[in-house]
Image (cartoon, rainbow, N blue to C red; front, side, top):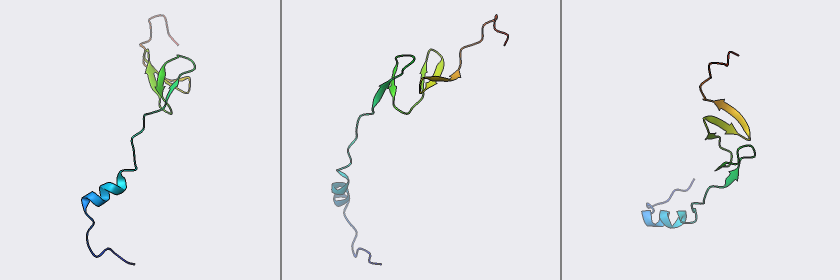
Length: 68
């Protein structure tokens, strides 16, 4: 298998990589809370972790009346 005879310069590698550009993250609005969040990511709102409009984790402390 052929290999390069000499090392490529850093500038040459950088020229090749210039086509990869940073893009802004796509934002969505949660259908239950109306909160803006990054797509395909869970997000915290008022002590609850939401993903796809459903509560995944609820970190609110239980009140004294709740015994269930």
